[in-house]
Image (cartoon, rainbow, N blue to C red; front, top):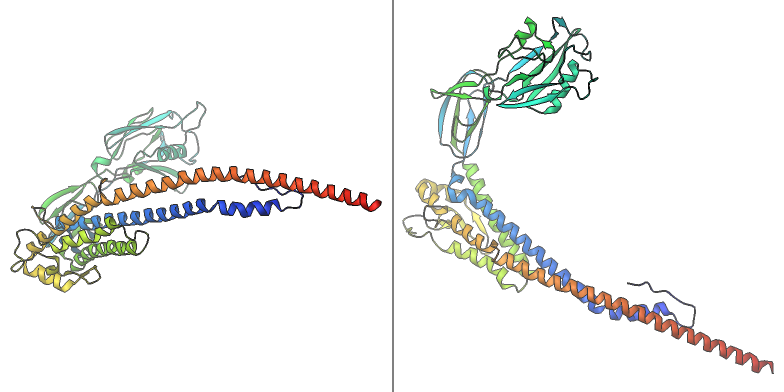
Length: 456
């Protein structure tokens, strides 16, 4: 908008034009207010969309019955290993006998030719421009020298290998006045061991001694300090298992076992009622969040929007419909029969004692209550209903599209109104500036006439 400039004269041009423009701006202000309201509505619909998606996430484990497969895992000797649960599994006790842990390959180089290394930055005679390793079946090259006059030293080899990020850790170790290069696989196990495959003055014996690397060699002491890679070897209830890592993930279903040392210990799995309750409460909380957001919309930005407000009605209709084909008298057909009841305010409440009683009465019926082969479980039907709401043609996306159209209309209107206001303001400034000039000229003429009459 053009700036309002004042001029010398009998009239306050700036003040007059400002007052007139305040009246002219009313349609623009009203459009901006409507746009703000529409944007608030859009934010409210977005919040509903997020809470519905969160409810779907909470339903995922319920429809498959995995929410009941929650266990506590304990280990008989914490110095031998640790356990953590994942998903699935079954109650029981497992005898773990560890013969040896998984190790990573390590090679120690402490000589150049037959001489010990006393300066890690000294040039290595015969060092190549590059060396190559094979890690987990993949050959990768490390450049040691970019220019012909670059110095390749023990420290250079160490730094270049680490910078390459090829699955090998390098370190320079000092023992008194002697320096050594230690190479080790990042990951343990036979599949992750490294092998020296190329480079002048570089060779791999395949064992712990006799290898060379870029002019470096191994003394007998370095050979004893090196080690071969190995898999962890253990038995679970007598069944032999080989694992490339000391975190064993497939030996016992639903459990990850961290091995600390060789020896024997037991792992016990028992049902975790608190974990099951947490999963159920997550569903209840997510459902209640949706209801809370619908109520907030009803009393706020989306007041009177029937399609949005119908979300609560559709969810409650799912609650009111029993699992098809299940006798509600002799079995469990409603969530309320498993301790999840509808409250007067439209929210859900979990009674853990009632749920535990239902589990004792008929665990499979509780599983089928949430999800079954016929897709008539409550979790499955809730999920289907929410899919419809979040579908591109569903209530959420169509509501967003409608509101965005309104915002766009107001934005275009505001642009048009602003252009007209700029033109109107410029016109008023010209008119009142001209009037001011005319009045000033009239005042000047009157003064001259008065002075002429007075002189006579």
